[in-house]
Image (cartoon, rainbow, N blue to C red; front, side):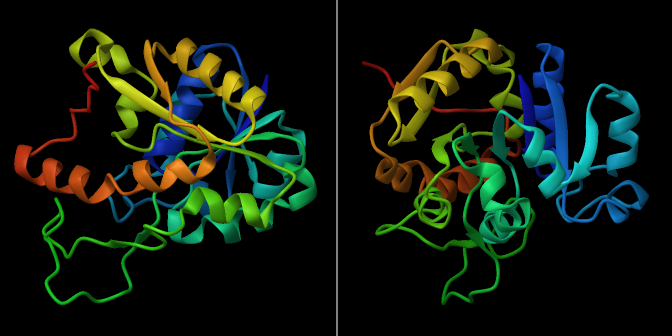
Length: 237
């Protein structure tokens, strides 16, 4: 397939590299086509500059959001959650229409102060979730782009495990799906199976993404307590 991965951070890079290794034609979408390859410093999360990664993955091309989305048969939203709707708007609603859009983002809000902020793994105040409880980022995206087929997936674990589950416990752990379109979820399940996932739980309609998005505070607490991100959840049943 022709796949567009929107977002050049660690999550977007993990998906782009894995998809290219599986033989897909992959384009990473960015907001600023000139600035992204020109950066020479790590980003706020400590991710190395994009240019160094791109040199190691020559099969993956770089394009603006709209150009990447226009040619894609399937898209992955790996942008920062607080900016996802704006980034997808830049990609163009007409370029998303009728296509499966896998949303792997988390709606972290670093701008809203809280009375007792929990420390993050980076010794800064942890973000709150916005939206949460009565809404989700995935639902916001679906409302903003009603002709897209939004599926929430692999948003509950670290980037390196999203696309390589066998790196932990031989792959014996769980990932979730949420979405309103059964055929779209089947396509996403097939992609996850290609990544190596064996335990994929379909939670149901897209509103269930509220639950998986709200795992983020627990994820951050575990990351800080354990001192690493090499873990995931297993649903024992």
